[in-house]
Length: 248
Image 1 (tube, one colour):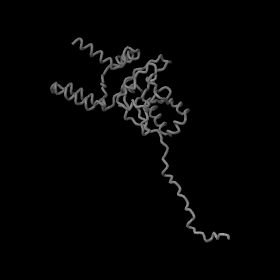
Image 2 (cartoon, one colour):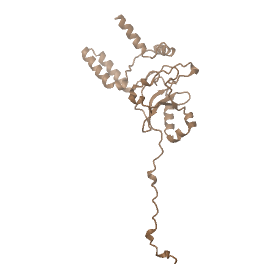
Image 3 (cartoon, helix red, strand yellow):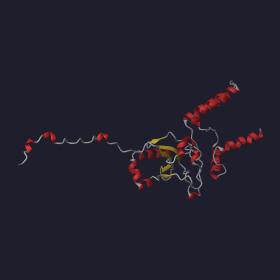
Image 4 (cartoon, helix red, strand yellow):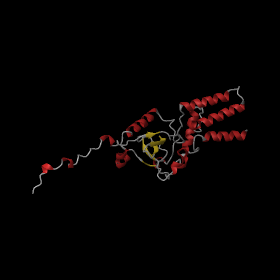
């Protein structure tokens, strides 16, 4: 006997499934940059860079900020275009070691920690840093002179750079100079005030000091560092102090 489908309960008909909400789909992850670990050290200062270099650097960061990270890591041609690759810490005559980046803490020794670099442009150097677990790229160094990976083309020479001072650093130095020059303040009190300033602002000054020298003298210092007579520009001060101490 044929079944009368008209008597079937409509309640047995399955309800249509809900469509996924579009708003729940996570957006593509793009490059995000952080400067919390950026420092200037010997060979990686930006004080002698022209304004056009800073424009090129900011333009590169702007361009890369538009890139989808997944697409970037899936496209080796794009990585080659930006000269993106890990740092070879065993490279010939590399001027620093991973241990020198002590402000990164112990994370720099973790197994999954990897420092990488990419170019600003062919002639204006590199940006060096690492991705953290949140996939944020932390800039550690700017390398306008290609010093981190010395080139065989230029006999693996590294170039001296000048560590630029920010306005706050200059202000701190002026305060220190004013304290030293004040003849109405006791010598012991001066020393204590200067120690307090150094301890409080050491993360800003980073052991750097400002010295007023002539252009001719600065050219000589750059020449000595470039030729290898001096390892870093600060050696000039240390040698002068050692010589003066012998005379004292």
